[in-house]
Amino acid sequence: MMFFLTRDQQEIFIAAHTYPFGEEFDAEFEDYLYENLAEYIDFLPQKFQSGIMERNLFRNDTLMERFKIWCDVTIEQFTTKSNAIYEKREAIVECFNPSAQTAFSQSFHDGKILNAEQQGNNFTLLLDMSGGFTVASMVQLVFHDAQTEGNLEGYYVYDELIKIDGRFALRVLSSFGSPYAEWTIFFKDVTARYLYRPAVYIEPGEVATWDDYVTALNREDKYYINKNLIDGVSPISKTRVPCYWIKSNY
Image 1 (cartoon, rainbow, N blue to C red):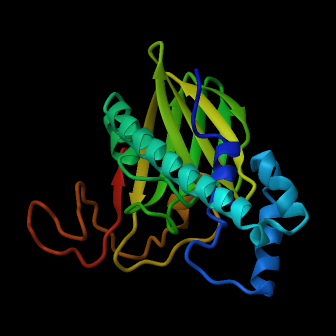
Image 2: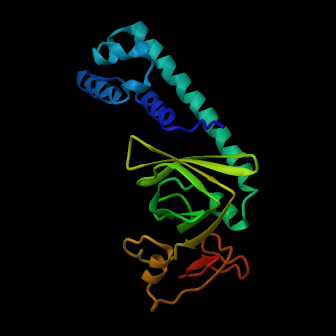
Image 3: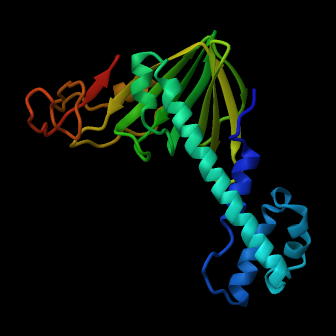
């Protein structure tokens, strides 16, 4: 079983994006580029490494053109593979529990990892999505019959999902910034709970568990419980709800 998504692949992709396509650069900017490329020196082809360390890559037209071509090809291949990974993820998610299908239908990119712990045969992952790209404010994933490898830290960045021998495996890259941490979870099933962000709402403070989040809500406020609410509009009444807290499977 092989994942395409690895820490090394991600670092290579970032290094390829360092090239200043279409930009003019002076000596100061050139120094900046060399400093940045030096951080990824171990992930670059050996034929470019000496040019970076000796700071003559951008003064050798032939070598620079080869480096530009390598960057172009690397970015194109990574993008093509990433699109294929996304399409495979969409297909596999259809096998999940309905609650998990809803959660995985959106990206967990930039979700803050609040809690990640093994509890017997299950593994619980709690994400604060207030700074992410989902309509949910908080997502809790419970992976059943799960085993893990590697580490999670900071923010959930990218993932790759595969299915093998009737089980699932999820590869996650997380970070506080480069370099990335690499983590894999193998599981039989996954369920999810999620809270949606109200229209008028102040986020609670730091939380570590699902119950902490619920407890932190202001009980003096008036909340409306709705399901399948899209963009603040109830599909039943077709009216906009001014202040609401949506909860699912809670």
